[in-house]
Length: 170
Image 1: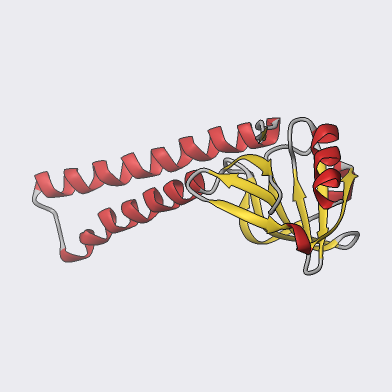
Image 2 (image 1 turned 180 degrees about the vertical axis):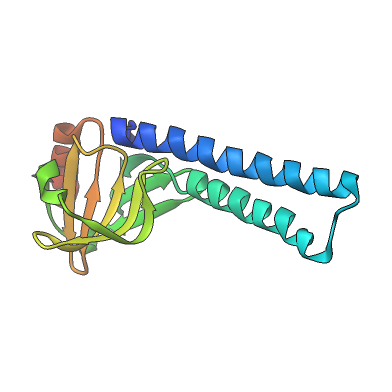
């Protein structure tokens, strides 16, 4: 397995985001408990724990979707996530190549996670068009061009990864 170490922006985004969400969760729970204890609880206050659960569910989802690494088998390239994995089948892959982080400049996230445990989901920019990201850092980028889309990944040892994917394809 090729590991996917966290880059500086992902580490920073994860720390700041986790602190903010944890603060919101704890604050909302504290407000709920104070309202219950003081007798000022009204029917609408039941939304406080519901919103708290939503924030917790969002945090849990993003943690479960974090990118842990990549594996190359005879079947294709597998993106290993926190709770699941996603297979990019060998017969879908047309080309594999290095890209520079400047190729991702001015990308807009259309769906997915942007820097909280990883960058994953659908992104678009003028230079590359629509693409799917499964990255944890922007310093070690590899693009898998498939029949349907462009998939960007960030294995720690990108030279070895690229050579192994080329071997798998031939």
